[in-house]
Length: 306
Image 1 (cartoon, rainbow, N blue to C red):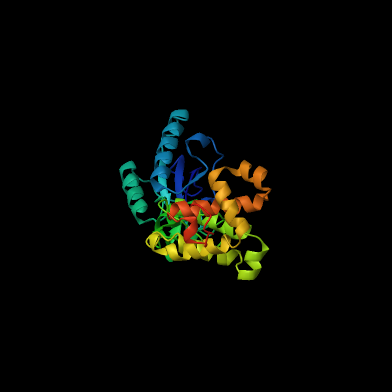
Image 2 (image 1 turned 45 degrees about the vertical axis):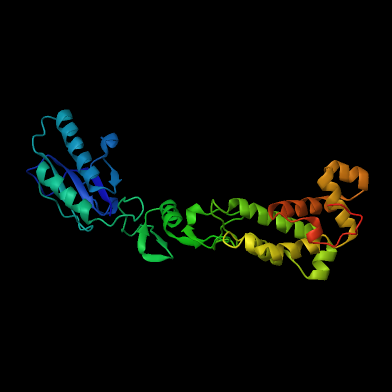
């Protein structure tokens, strides 16, 4: 609901020298006898969503008008709902105006986030939440803030529910939530899952083709392995994953080499490709996390020393 403040000189009211009119509905419903704007800074010619602010502006305009034109002894404020009919309002006392404004404020529909009044006029633009169509918001920003606090979504890893604003993702939200969301507690585990995906993808065509593992499958494996509640109980699938990654003697030698030297040493001493060194590095990370020895995942010749 909008309240428009203007100065008028009603045609049929010959006993008054002028009026400060507060009209419900906005400028389109203002009286036809509007005077030229003179007190714009005080609120003349402006629309207000808060009736209390409109009344305060009207009182200040009346006082300034009386000061500037003291010869006009019969100026008053009126509050009307003319409905565009051009009806002339009656004088209101200041105390009655203030009480009226307070009552109007209590009755106004308000934004369910910020509490500001909503414009329910013909030019109004309201924002609704799909999760609760009974709620109304004054701006898209308020709608977004409410949803961030009140829409509950599940963390991909621990499967606990959190307000949407407390979950993170590495992709755009778009129209629907992303497939992978993580809470603050699970953020390190999400990074581990990313490493697992990188490792699965970097393992080369043999891993992807021979084992039928694509990117989506990699994420499913990663999510399963880093589940918070079952983290340590998933040592078996971790071991199986490592067996796939360390599937030949060349990779076994590389893992041992990286563990004893560093990336540069693996390149210089063994002539390994960058992708292979990355895989070996990830394998070592998993082994350290789960306290797994290399001999536990691949059979080593007797001359090898772990």
